[in-house]
Amino acid sequence: MELKVCKFGGTSMATKDSVLKVKNIIQSDNSRRFVIVSAPGKRFPGDEKVTDLLYACYEEKNISGSCRGYFDKIRERFVSLVKELELDFDIIPYLDQVEKGIIESTSPDYAASRGEYLSAIIMAQVLKMDFVDAADVIKFTAKGIFDSEFTNDLVSKRLSFYNGAVIPGFYGTLPDGKIKTFTRGGSDFTGAIVARAVEADIYENWTDVDGFMTTDPRIVNNPRLIDYLSYDELRELSYMGAGVLHPESTFPLQATGIPINIKNTFNPSAPGTMIVKDTATVSAPRLITGIAGRKGFTTIFIKKSMMNSEIGFCRKVLSVLEYYGINMEHMPTGIDTMSLIIADNELENNLDEILDRIRGKVNPDLIYIYRNISLIAIVGHGMSNQLGTAAKVFSALANANINVKMIDQGSSEINIIVGVNADDMNRAISAIYHAFF
Ligand code: ASP
Image (cartoon, rainbow, N blue to C red; front, side, top):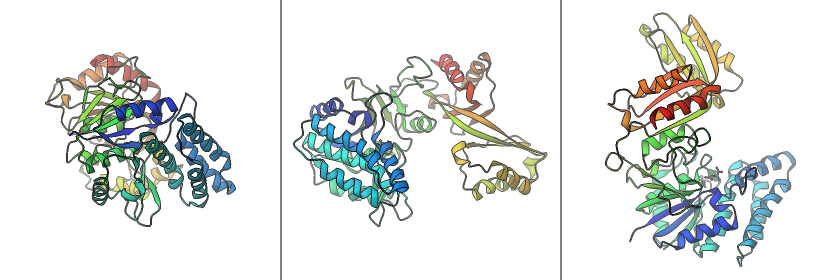
C-alpha cells in the first residue's frame, strides 16, 4: 500500500476549524500514516505565532526570571484549543512542565520547540494516534550539526513499530539531551527526514496556499501556479524569498527522489505543486519556472588595475570576510573589478572596519559600498542552452526604466540573479513576470 508522510504548517494547526480540517484530510486516506506538525500559527491577520511568543517567553525570563506575561498568552491559546476541540484530555500539566522548563533553560531552543511539542500532543489526541517525540529520534552532533545518518536510522527503526504516529516538527536533541531547533520554518525539514526514513511514496506538505506561485502574489496579482518544480528550482526560489517551503527541505530526499506535494489544507482537492527531482519528463517545456526577490543586501565594490593578474587577490579579500565570520552571497567579477554581495544581517556595525582591512590586504584603487540592494532570482532549468532568456530579462528591466546594479549567472544555468535598488524590486519583478508569463 502507498505510504504518505504529511506535514501540516502553522495555519493548519491554529484553530479548532483548521485542526478539524486536518483530521478530515488524514482520515480520508489511510495511506496518510505519519503526521508532522508545526506550532499553531496566526489565527487572523495581526495575530501572534506561538513560536514567536515562545521566543518572547525566553527573553522575558532572561530579564525578569519569570515568563508569566507571555506564557499566559500561550496557556490561553492551548487551553481554549483543547476545550473547543472537546478533547477529553488535560493539557494543564503539560503547560506547567513547559513553563518550568523555560525558566530553567539556558538557550532559546527549548522554549521555541514547545509549540510543536504541544501541537503534536494535541493532534495525537485528535487523531487517536501515537505521539513520537522528535527529541528521541532527531539528533544533532555536539557541534549542533544535524546528524542525518544517525537520525535516519533511529527514525526508521522507531517508526517501524507504529502503524501511524504524530511527530512534532522543528527540533531534535544534542548528545547531552538538550533540545536543539532547526532554523525557522524547520518543520518542513522534519517532514522530509521522516519521509526518507519510512521510505514514503510521497511527502505531502500541507499549507494555506494552493501551491508554489510563479512569483510573489503580493507583488503580481494572481500569478500563475507552478505545477511541477524541481528540487533545485525549489531551493533557488525558497532561498531567494519564496516562503512556501524551507529551502533545505529537499536535502533528506535527494538520494531517493521522493516527491513533495504542496497542498492546501483549506482547499484539499486542488492538485497543488509537485516537487520532483527532475522535471524534464513530467512537465511541459518552459523557459523559466519562477521569479523570487529578497531585500536587504549590501555590495562592497572593489576596483584595482590589473587585479585579474594578481594571484591570490580574491583569496585575500575573502580572508577578510572569513575573519569576521561573514557569509557572502555572490561575487561577480570583471577584469579589474569585483563586487561582494552580502546580506545585511551578516553585517554588524563593522563595515568601516571591514573596508579598512580589505584596503590593508589588497590596496585597491577604489573601494566603496552600495546599500539597499535587492536580489531577484529568475529560476528555471529551461533557460540552459536556450538563447534569449537574459535578453528578455534585461529588456523588460530597461523598458521599466530600472537600473541593474549587478548580474550573476551560475554555471549551472538554472538561474539569473540581478541586483537592483530595493525601491525598484517590486516593479522589476512585475516587469520580468509579464515578459515571461
Ligand atoms: N514553528 C517554527 C517556526 O515558526 C517552525 C515551523 O513552523 O516550521 O519557524
